[in-house]
Image 1: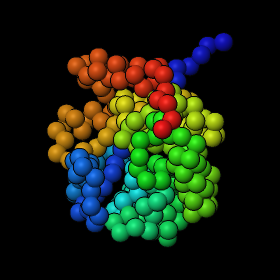
Image 2: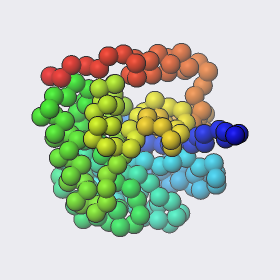
Image 3: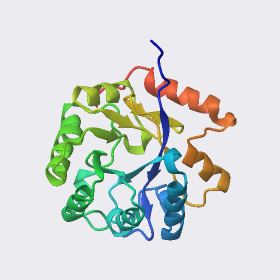
Length: 233
């Protein structure tokens, strides 16, 4: 029997588009891009055809519905939206109706937790709030099973992975760069930031990790995937 190589595909992370309408967390501003930049990236994705990256959004900002949704629809693109359940209905974030609209348009709703906190070392109460309660609300709003999760801040460890697998999730999306295999539980993504150079943007779109980043990335993956999980706090 001849085994075929697993197919790999780059995955992008978008956060906010345009002008934020809520107070940003420290260091978050770099992840907000202009509408023009967003549209340019979508046009490049369309032009890539079969080699186009998968598109994801984190946090559930209002711009997901106000800007991203219509621009995706214009181009016939689909995406995954990893939402924070506790932000739904808050100023600057998606409303309940927005979540329903995204799901009705054929986009996938995923879990980003409840309040944007580090999932490492969650105790039983934390896991209930961040995994089960948040997932239940998103399932109710989207009308579809929520089977994919994205780690806040890109932080995870063996404990997070095991907990999500125990909860029945099919995949955990990270921010580890590179290309993802749709047969793997851990799926690295490439973050889109404001003011990226042409080279950096091309690397993100293709999932290419420059040689100079290989040692740092390898150490990060070892730390996240192999070292013991944090104890619950």
